[in-house]
Image (cartoon, rainbow, N blue to C red; front, side):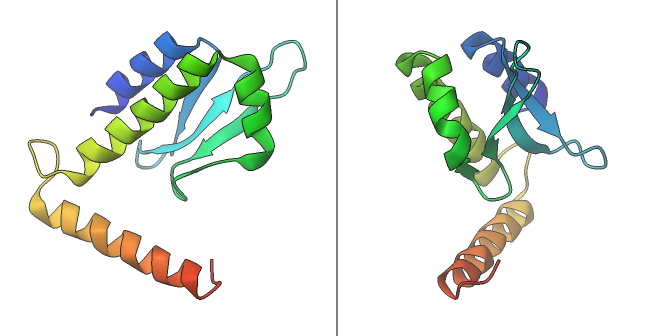
Length: 114
């Protein structure tokens, strides 16, 4: 899935949800929930750790409908599925590197390292 497609699908879920990308690579870094009234944006999902931010999940689920939260989770899953599957956008080497990276991260987490 392309980043542009991800952004479009994210905006359909809620116009308050935005995708931040790394400037140097264009890869996704976080999903934020925009709060114009309060003037603060809430980071709700980190792509590097593949996790929702626990402190913001309450705000997110009280802001968007339950069905939309499910759509957000499915969108994120679709993104990771497209990234981890060999295909047109990613070669087998990229997929193997992704799997190796995930395995190293899991081992570090098991050992209490970050």
